[in-house]
Length: 256
Image (cartoon, rainbow, N blue to C red; front, side):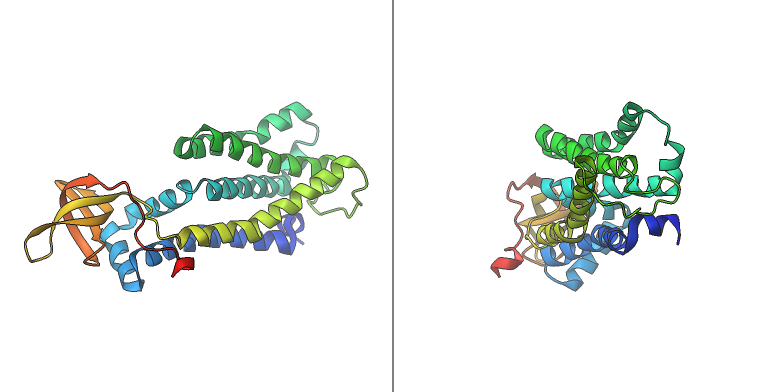
C-alpha cells in the first residue's frame, strides 16, 4: 500500500476527488444555470476565452464567503495530510512543536489574506483559524501516535485521551466538510441565479439600432465590453456602460 493511500484511505481519496470535481465542474453549472441553458453557456464561454475562464471560479468562490472558507479549510487539511504522508512527518519528527505549529500556519495565513481581501477582515480571520485548526489536527494525529510517521498508516490506536480524541474529531470534520458541506454549498452557489461578475447597463446594437440593455460582462475590449445580453439571450458588444447594483439574473433553482 502506498504512503498516500495509507495516509488517506477510501474516505479521504473520495474527499480529494470531490474537492477537485467541485472546483472544475461547479463553475460550468454556474455559467449554464445563470445564463439559461447549454447553448448559452457554450456561447458565453467561447466569447470569454480561456484567459477569462478563471473569472468564473474567482467570482463564484470568493463572492460566497462561506463557500470560500470551507474550500480553504478542506485545502489546508488535505494538502498538509498529503505532505505529512509523503515523508513530511518523518523528516520533521524531531522538530520542536513551536516550529511545527509555525510551519503549519503558512497556508492558512495565505488563504485568510485572499478570502479577507474579497469578503472582509472577519471572514479572513475565520477562514484562517478554521484552516489552521484543520492542519493542527493532522499534526496531533502524528504526535499522539494516531498515524505512523514512517508509513503514514493509521495505527489503530484507540483515542482514549483528550488530544487523540480532538485529532480524530478534526479528521471527521474535515471529511464531512469535503464530502457533504462543500458540494452542497457549491451547488447552491451555482444555482442561486446571481452573476459571478459585473452586471452592467450598456448601449448595444443587435441589428435594430442602438438601445440600452442589461448585460453580464464577459470580457473587456476597448472601447467597451463583450457581454451577455440578458433580455436578448446572446453575446453582444456594449459601450457607455454603467454598473447595475442588482446582480440577480434569474430566480434561484429552488424557487422555480
